[in-house]
Image 1 (cartoon, one colour):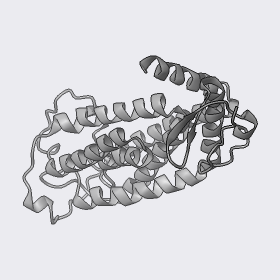
Image 2: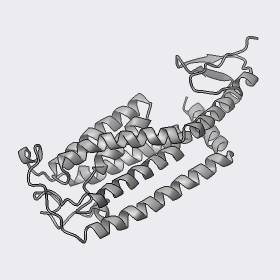
Image 3: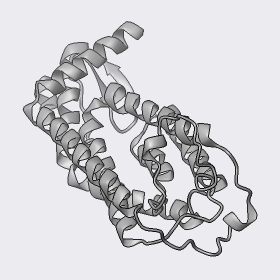
Image 4: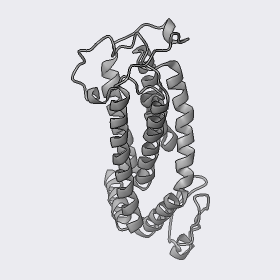
Length: 267
């Protein structure tokens, strides 16, 4: 089984990299994400030059203590990103370019809101009262005034929306809850920052999915065609069952949507 999985992965990568549209889309998505990262970084630095007033009262923060959860805050997020990267670049590489664009749109939206929302961090924020931070991976990405909305809640939630595999989806769900609770118990975000993240992230997900629906469908169809020819089996897309036998490749080439069931010709 492991050997077959490796062969499928190699075949997927070779097939996609031979597609000029996919390669261009992938490179463009990385470029887009890089540009957005630079914009976000310098906007956050600029925003931190100013001191904004904190919100005086928060329904949830007022009732919970400030805890030291630096390890989960940094390493928990890095592990989450690592797991999502494995899923999208190893199991579902056909989705990787559009997912990268989705995160770029998400970060760009967050940067816009941060510029428009002049609110200071909670007065009992963990990072305000602990200036001697540990040398953790995210130390250089911690800014004082980039509050709305919570990136720690949004990042795993966006992966959760895209992922179909039950196991990986469960991991992203747990990570979303864990990261949300972490930033609340550290008092580095207001409650509204966390709850708003879910609604905004879902909006970005729907927008991005509709924007690239044709490209994603073309990549998936091409992979199905190649897999049918190479491994001599097809998947009933409605029921998720595999069928083995001779394949009428002319019919496979006429796939138009994910909802169609490919018929296998009889011997």
